[in-house]
Length: 187
Image (cartoon, rainbow, N blue to C red; front, side):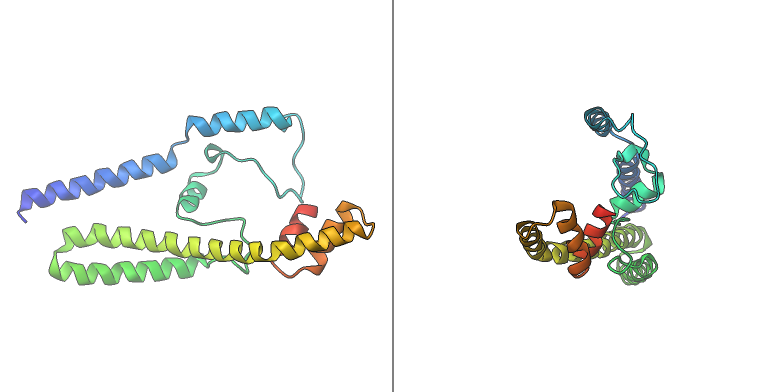
């Protein structure tokens, strides 16, 4: 490839990355309207929702910080318990190492101008893959335990326990992660 063609290719990659970053970071009007509808329907604006046990929040993407929105775009789930979440340090190390290896291999064949964007995109895709894999594994484990949890609730209610106590019994008698999630809900 000639030098002007490489410059156009590099310019195209930079424009693509800037466009993607703008789409991820700029809040959308739809999310703001949905948040206003949710607040109006539940009257959350009138209630105090602070406290140490608050676990359910209504956050529009515009209310989250820039770093939180970037991390969420890459598949990071801040609500996952630490035992099930991917280590951010390990994800960064593995993705960075793979990106460097791809850059090293491609730069010998195609040159650094093509190898750099490919290595960066591969590293970012690998970050997203690792975070999403952990989230999907957690969800699969949780969904596999839901029938047993519902069965426990039904049996408890049939035995005469109130629904609240039946849900609390799920948080004490079921294995993790179902017990953790029901514990957070009943907390």
